[in-house]
Length: 416
Image (cartoon, rainbow, N blue to C red; front, side, top):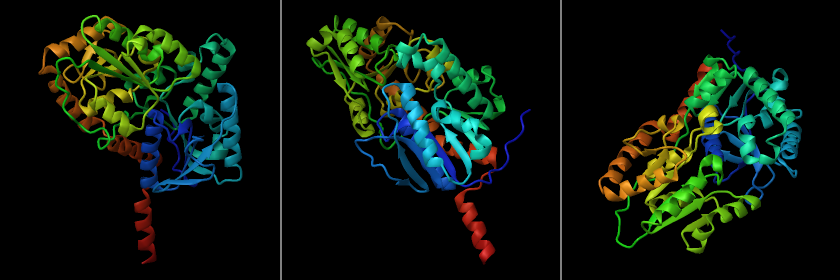
């Protein structure tokens, strides 16, 4: 059994993340939900994240009740340079500040320097593990995939963060199992799945088929093979042999990635069967869901999805909107949705996607039945409010932290 962390005596909560904020990506949505919950519950939260130069200034900004956002820079030509730049800006911000009660990190890029100097910086460390670079880096930066020395360093930094964290938060049961295999103490791991803003992703019944109208397929997320975008593209190509179809792809693309994706789409782009959109604000993405007939979540079998694990936010958002979902039959999907809520298909098969779409077209009652049950599941298990409450509860139970309202009431009674 591990030693319980002491109750924090430091000042405030620092939530640091090597992610761009604000942004339409799922990471930014997750960050906002968590810092807002911590700010409302405990107050005194400082959010440190990458500045979005197009929308955010450089100074401290009030973000929500009890939360101040400090945008930081990360300059450099590659990931390593950017991470080192971010760490330098983080250290400069931290200089001469009081010891924190809790530091909450989302990756080793900000977490490793904190873990190394934990005793000097904070009473308690929270490591929120949505993904680990030793698994994911080769998908985002294939040019460094063969760098054995870099991989060794990444694993060592991950291990230090895992061993020094007083609380490990992850959105996936699969990821929790992987962390324990990596040496994490099971009692320090909390699974808190992602959530959905039900007021933004409002429910609407599926669109009934109309003669002559193309089937509209939607894929949102990272445009990479490890997310299965190539299976979505091939499924559109196969489906168009039998009926009109249009595939909308929504997500970020680097310059080289855009060229590769356009090459893969080829004839479909020429035929107007593929639409490429940059990441959209949540409200616009929700409207696009309602304009689509099927949402695709075609996660393939790989170490990121099946060993490390994930909690696909796009699956939950699609379930919330009521648009029928076709998703890979993987453990990370089955923990969020059953076969009566989404169409579960064989992973890695464009043909299986096509057969699922055709089944939805052939049975007019199938889509609405899946839609209603999917929305009910999200309302019950995956509103952001539930995830936020679980995070606050984890802080209370692990660190004995008192809510700001309780502290105010105690102070008032002492002064009475």
